[in-house]
Length: 311
Image 1 (cartoon, rainbow, N blue to C red):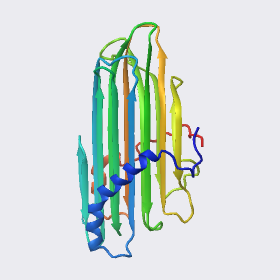
Image 2 (cartoon, rainbow, N blue to C red):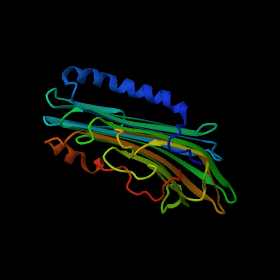
Image 3 (cartoon, rainbow, N blue to C red):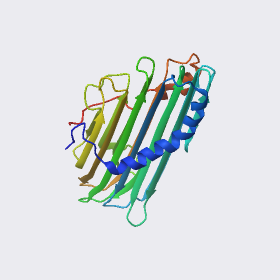
Image 4 (tube, one colour):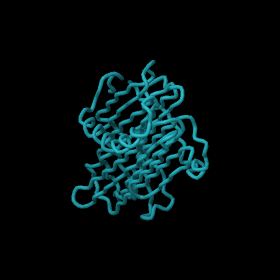
């Protein structure tokens, strides 16, 4: 059951979260503070998501991981863009108008020997100060495990998932920041080891979205799942839609399990994917070419919100 929206939860995640914010933004704050007038506003957005999978009933016969990060910063004098399979960061500084940074981090691990387990984590953050700038950071991490089950066998595993979101501004009239996260599980089944003609057997997805420029109107967390996924515990905390408050924040933690029996031999492929994304901006920069280069990836990382998580 989810806690009331003003009750803080999962304090074990908070110290590390705060420390990562300060370590990441300290160089940027020190630099921009030198060349920016005190009256100029500032924005900051942060999104972190993680997942841990263990307790597998079967060991995977193959496993793989994937990570990707993208960052973009734009001021009226130009833009910087970076996309890699590792961590990425970009900074655009103009002491006369606006300065902005963005940073994306991602890591993933899937061990198959002895007691198999998988873990991945993504972090996206951006901040800016001044009058005309835009910053975007996106991170993605994926786990893939392939299994084989015999007739009358039950495939199962446990999982812990969480994300933390923050979006803050100084001036509601001219600034905006957003923070989003999505964690999804997908189980595919096929008669063939190469997963020819594979079909979707089960799925689970949970997401959150904060936007200082929009009215959420309800708890900003959403989920959908099939019956084979079960929640053992789920907690949420959020501050949003508060008049006079220039920041929003939220945390979500879900621990649960999966269990399903099969009546025929079957190859199973389990995919766990997570995405985090943040944006910060002051009145839109004059140079928009970089946004075109960035392509469709500048949109929300999820577009379907089938069911709101109950408070």
